[in-house]
Length: 583
Image 1 (cartoon, rainbow, N blue to C red):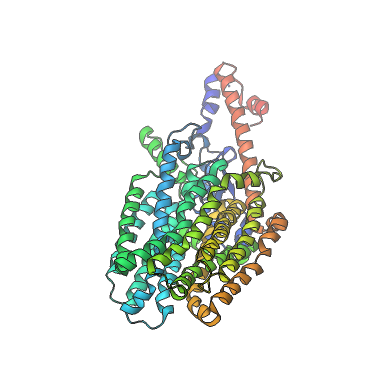
Image 2 (image 1 turned 90 degrees about the vertical axis):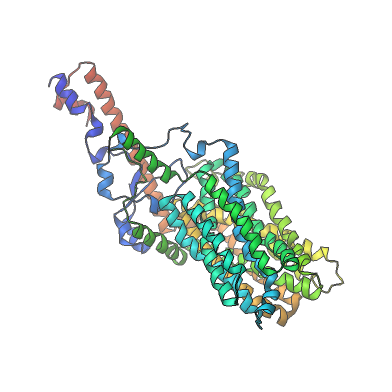
C-alpha cells in the first residue's frame, strides 16, 4: 500500500466508529444489580461513568444508551482541562467562599422558618381559637414533610437543568408563599401553605451539599461542608430567637414578613452566583464547541439520553429501594432520624419549660436555645482537629484515603454527648430554683452531638455510596423529616403527662438505646459494605471502567505511533500494519 492509501486508512482514527476504541469514561452497570434493586427497566440498558476527578453526580445525569456510547468518538469528548478557568473547582478561593456563604445563608433562611413558627404557637391558638396545641404544631410537621417531599422532586430536576435555575426559581416561589402565611385567616390555610413553601425551599436543603462538592476538592470537602453547615445547623436555633422577639413585640404575622425580607436577600444571592454543576457546564461546553466548529461529533459524557420522566422515575424510586433494602441505609436512616426528631421535639419542650415553668417572656425563651447553638458551632470550629483524627486511621486498601468508617469514630463520641446533654437538661430545667444558666448550658453537649452526628454520619453515607450518594441522602432526608415532623406532635402531651424531668429522661433513654449503632458500624462497617450488592456492583463498574479506559488509551497510543510512522513515509501495508501494531 502506498503512503496516501495508508494515510487514508489511519490518519483519521477518530473518525472510525469502532466500539473497541471507545474511551468515554463509561462502564456498564450490573444488570443483575438493577434487577435485584428493582430499578426501572430503563436502567438495565444504561451505563454510568467511572469516578471522575469532578464531584460525582447521581446516576440520573450520566445515563446514555449502550448504542450511543459505542458509536461515540473518544477524540471528540469534551472534558475539563487541568487549568480550565470554567471548571468550578478552579475558581478563585474568594469566589468559592462567596458561593458557600450564599447557599449557607439561603439554607439558614429556609430552616429557621421551620422553628420560628414554634414561638407563635400560643398566639396562633388564641387568634384562631384552636383548643389543641397539637393542631397548631402541625405547622411544624407539614413544613418538615414539605422539605422531604421537595427534596425528592427538586434534586433530580437540578440534575437535569443545573443548580442555579432551580435555586433561583424555587426561592422566588418560597418567598411568594410567605405572603399568604402572613395574611392567613385560618389554621388550615397556614398548615397547607407552609407545606407548599417548604417544598420550594427544599431546593436549598437538597442541593446545597452538592454545590459544595461541585466547587471544592476532596481534600477540603469536609472543611467546606462544615462552613456551609453553619447555616442549616444553626437555623433551628436562630428561628426561635427571631420568632420569639418578633412575635412578642410585633405579632406572629410579622415573623413571616421578617423571613420574607431575609428570603428576598437569599433569592438575590441565588440569581447572582454562577452555575456550579459540572455535568450541566460540560453539556453547555460541548454545545458551544459544536456551534463554533460546525462539528456535530463533539459530546460530553453527561449528555442526556433518558427523558425527564425517565429520570424522575429513576430518582424517585431508588431512594425508597435503598431505604428498605440496604442495611447501611436502614440503620443510619433510623439513627439520624431519631436524633433529628428529638432535636425538633426540643423546640416544643423548651417553651414549655422556660415559659410555663420559669415564666420567661416569649422573646427571652427563644434565647434558651443559645446553648444548642454554641455546641453546634464548637463542632464546626473543631473540624480541623476532627479531620486530623479521621486521617489518623489506616488508609483503605487500594486507596490513600481513610475508610468511610473513620468518620464513624466521631459519631461514636457524638452518640454519647447527645444523651448526656438531654439528661443534664431533664434534671436541671425544673424546678425554677435551679439557676437558668445550668439547663441552658446542657444544650452545649447536646448541640455539639447533634451537629457531629449530622455532619459525619451523612459523610459516611456519601463516602460509602459514591455515585448513589444522592439517592442515599434523599432517602435519609425523607425518613429524618418524617420522624422530625411527628415527634414534636407528642411533645406537649408527653411533657404534661410525665413532667419535664421524666419526659427528658425518656428521650435520653431512647438516645442511649441507639448508641450501639455507630459502634457496630465502626467495628464491622467494612464487612457490611462488602456484603452490600449495590456497593459491590458499583465497585465492579468502576474497576471495569478503569480497565476499559486503560485499554482504549493504549490503543490510541499505538494508532498515534503508526500515524507518525506513516507521515514519515514508512508506508506499511494493511497486513503489516495490523501485524506490527496488533490493531
